[in-house]
Image (cartoon, rainbow, N blue to C red; front, side, top):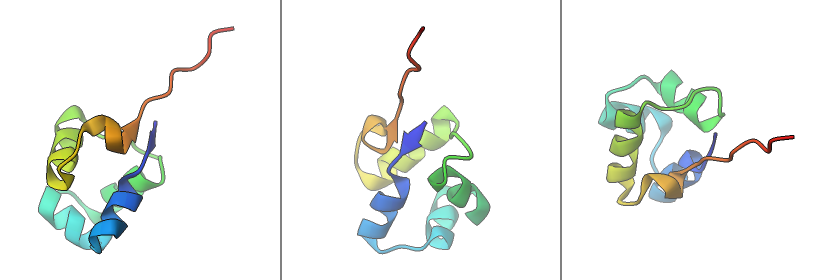
Length: 68
């Protein structure tokens, strides 16, 4: 799943460490989310969207795989 988390975070001018503290997760979790190595739980996705004042779909982009 692609996401715009890093873009949203940088627009706010906050570091990964600061966002991690606000969301009560590790900085590594934020880094993994931003790099697409980890997909958030639905609860974490809601927390992130609420923090940025936007919809989950504005941050996390779900792309279905094309069936062949």
